[in-house]
Length: 449
Image 1 (cartoon, one colour):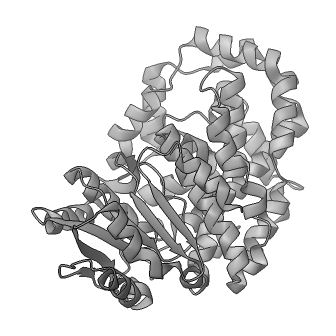
Image 2: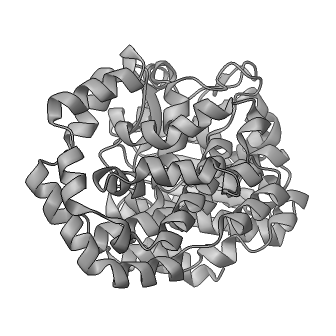
């Protein structure tokens, strides 16, 4: 990916002022720090694993540039660090009162922890990315579990990002695979945004769209190279992830990079699925499975011709009142999720007259929507093949998830986010049940898997 694309994106970034991606660029950390934070001291935040990977190189670069360093704060290497708010509080209190700029030597989880801690302290920080494992390095906001609910907490992106491809290429295969899973979800997420654009729910920002979707196919083109740690393939993946983060930064929301596939992952995370594994089941692995799941559902929708399948009168008659919706949600989710999920669901709940208007508009706009969806989407089998190649997760059996629990995710995931996605539209159309049934019936996508 040409550096000019990232440079252009930086022109509209609200928080990030410099990004260095390339082989050996960890050596530029000191120069970049001194340019952005002249005369300031630094404090490295890492865990033992990331310290072994890049800590010494970062220290050498900073000291060579004349940067004074405070004693680092280093989490233990085991158990694997979790993006819980308690860890945000730990870092925040460690940094509080220190006249020093934090330097996160980190992959996704620790970067999010430091990002939120710095946001609460209203200070800038620098991130040295150690793996192409997620799109949050350059994004506005941090994905943190707080009060049992996985949510994106607002906070600025790092002021400077250093992404050394040699370090990233040497990361464990599972980290690269999790980044690939996080990035590939942008394909069906884009389809979700197209639906919202055509129905007037949330219009697409063409510039922000181009930041994510423009380089997306190229960034996903070489899953085998990513698995093998080929620096060129890692460069494409890392650049795509950074561009996605810059898009979220420009839009001040995760909408450009997150759709229904992420809802699947977030639900499983909130229900602590795979959290007690060592290492814990990664966000990107769950997102990859969510990606295939949503793409397969889109294929059923496109094969059925949604406009012909919608019976507006029957759908409106079946539409639940808010009290009925609340009861359904409480029956579907564990009690600890009721209050936050109800708040999210209330944000997109419609009355029956509004549902009728939306379904009528869907029928009217469907020829255009269908054309745009077909241009945007890739077949579920193609997405699955790419994820299989890179070593990601594409079937619930790979993570020991019972098929009935997995199937139920199609119905329950929509409760946890205000963001409107395909499953919301199908629910309003009273078609989610039969379309999901088709996926699991003989000859359906999951039956065939």
